[in-house]
Image 1 (cartoon, one colour):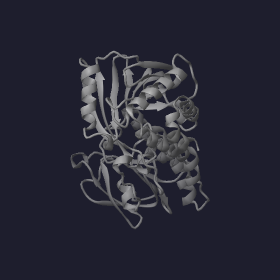
Image 2 (cartoon, rainbow, N blue to C red; image 1 turned 135 degrees about the vertical axis):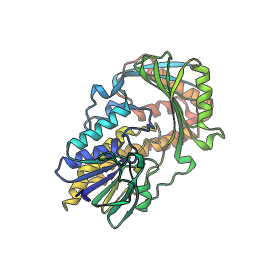
Image 3 (tube, rainbow, N blue to C red; image 1 turned 90 degrees about the vertical axis):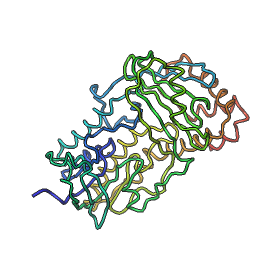
Image 4 (cartoon, rainbow, N blue to C red; image 1 turned 180 degrees about the vertical axis):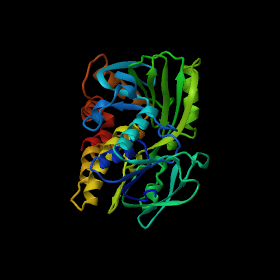
Length: 394
């Protein structure tokens, strides 16, 4: 008879969910990991960049997961001027499809039961109600639920179901996003282009991306994730419009192989846990409000959640909220303030800040970027930005 009771049930098998599952299973408890899509890692909604410093101590990145090793970045300002920052071993551009599958396989090897094509549709009385998300695949061993409703009982629940998190809504968490609290994103995987394969590109300016920034993350010597995010209240046009205009101008002969449209949250939740549940990753709004990055915080929150869920199940004191505060929320709140200031800037301010950044970083080899130090430099160099910058520092 198939198992229907578990110590922990995790909804969502992205990096956050798989990290939580693996961590909890190491302690010898039963874990069920549910994924609504037939293949883990597909569809992809990510630029795939990951910095080494943000993941240190939580996960060792294997070479087979990496598309490109990054050794620095190229920053482009509103006028098209650029400067290069040398930052040896700063991070990677991943192959998320392989990466996500590998993390889920690691969890499965630890004893986690992984069910794909299985969509959670509700929570009642410590049970997750699921149905096959892809009935045509439901006869495959271990996949789906044969088209029928099924209930799985849990002692503890972890919601890792992304930015649209149903789990959060079912648990009465207010995960709604205002137009000022979201970046609308568009990205193409483009082949047949010429780029520097070990540098991430970052572009600012309202002509490219109102209220956000644009990026080029190399996947090889002639292919890259080319994308951008915009703040809806800063423009009446959609993200795809700005991306198409940019691609037409800079990559007219590139071949578009994949298209991704989505969003990144820029909100810090007041509540993301309860007596018998945690929200993690994008579901908990642990996405960086400034950069939109979510992989590292997904993995961090997954590891923290897996460890502390086991403590709660065993009626021991846990430290989930305190660890999330220290490892994730302190930085997110600071970055949210920077984003609020960024949205108040005019085009001339972007140009001046770009020139300040060029003076600080151009041609230098660094091992860290101190955001507060950069803000102080901006204050001294651009006194008219003092009212905005002062709030960030104090």
